[in-house]
Length: 132
Image (cartoon, rainbow, N blue to C red; front, side, top):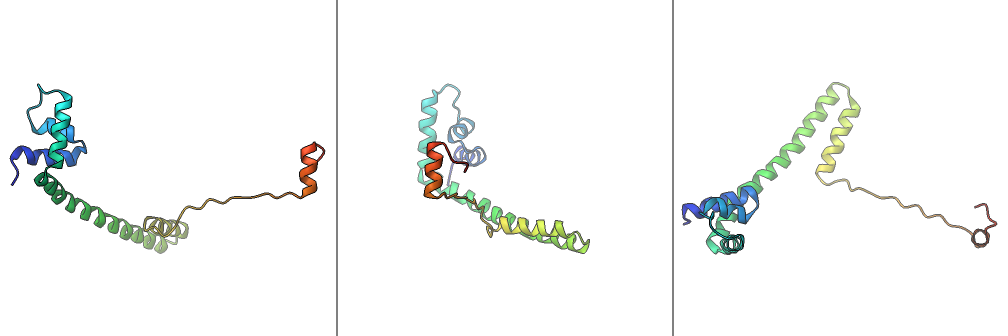
């Protein structure tokens, strides 16, 4: 079981993403050097009990993010259905495209064009007498 200060450290660390700031807020650190605060913050993050608590606190956050992603896809599907019902087909197609992109079905592609020239064209270009 963690002390109240350790628990506050964990909560603040997850909120800010900054162990040093979490240490400052959880502990009396006004008269401490920055190097000392950094060192103690790192020690806390490496502490087995604290690391376990951080993982325990992160798990629901990850699960909530996954539910949010599923909700996002469902909501886009609902928007598509509304657009179809209103015969706004371009909006329906766009909603479906966004669902596909969010789900990772589409990948951005880059097209490359290679222009070839004949041996004669290259010679003419190199000596300055070619039109292309």
